[in-house]
Image (cartoon, rainbow, N blue to C red; front, side, top):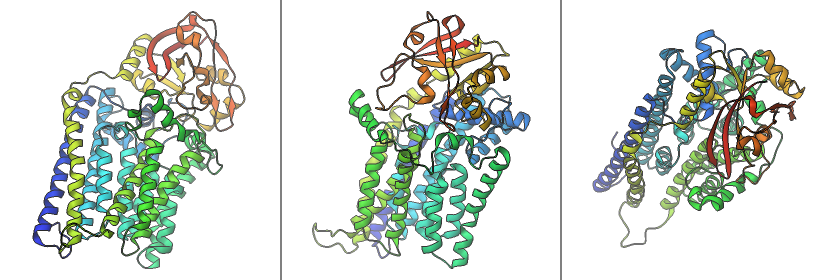
Length: 563
């Protein structure tokens, strides 16, 4: 489709078209420079996957083998987001449940990159359409494209649903801004299936606005919210039939919604880390202060920008969604551990879309006082905005190009290598238990029982509450316990140690095998209760490796034979 601005002279249309396609070319070059090494590395099993990524791959393999969605192969679990689990399960079915682990890593990385490409293309396409229609959203879409390509952020390379989430939100936001209720309703339903907690934070506010203030006849607007209602009822109903609870076990463990649990310490943590490790760390990952600052600036700009056709109201709704997402992190979390940056990917996407769009609208309102008044001011402003953002895409491309050779040659994966060592030590019939054990289960290909509860069932929570952890382990044939050990509590959070991880803090056990008792226990977030404790001694160790420093903490990874 030809780029043009209404009434613009041909030379302005040509300049806008040239700048836009230069941005497209730079985005394509950045994507290629990032993707080729990632796929080559994936062939060797090298990844930046989170441990939670393997909480999808392992149950997917068990489901393909047995038809039961289970992490440990015995206890059914629903601790996952359905759409991403369906995608990963399809990949495992296509490649084979018994394929080498490297094949599954490569398949997930390829899917993630394919979705990333779709998200970038969507942003660029929507920007193109907005330019043609003289709508003030084009800069917002280009800001989101920069986020997706930003070389310092790894949240779109971690094997999780994050990239798909951003793609679906961009589609939903475009439908909202364009006044297309049916497309918005379908996108909100897909967004919910991709990340269940978006229902009250994104789906409900936008669906209500669409119903009350949206475009089109009322019957169409009512029809548009049906997909979200059906998806919500289906997931809640299936969970209720399966487990007796409407929410999945992961939601029951992680979220306190609707009961507030204030975590103001999350706001201090980025500043504490910056003071401890240098202010460069503040910009090297998405944090809540940076996200909130971008969203606040955009929200202020919304108020003073110039819009048509209720554009301000639509953009204000997106800003509201951003604030709801941040409020959820501060108000409704049971965990004390640091906010995972991937949970800030969607709020940052919203913030950048709002900031870019409101900034463009603000520029459109400002008078041009340099020289004689241009005959086509809107076209000139658009050309200047594209010219201003072009160097950011160029810097992104240069950054990816600069690391291309070293990334292409990368063959080491510390997590993979650690658990391959564990694999060589343990007998084939070993049954292991522990917390954060996704990668352990995936790379060792042993049966692993999840003790943080996220990939277990509600019955396990009752056993923890009743002080029956030791008995539970015996009943499930657990032969080994795997756990990190810390020589001290972390100092970067400014908060107490996470209850689930308090047993990890043991200076003597972290230092070496010469100790008599390391007390092991876990925690139930459903019942706010610690389990019974039992001793693991240095004589029970079958594997130990010094992992290195994590902030101020010396970490060892130890596997015990269960006494």
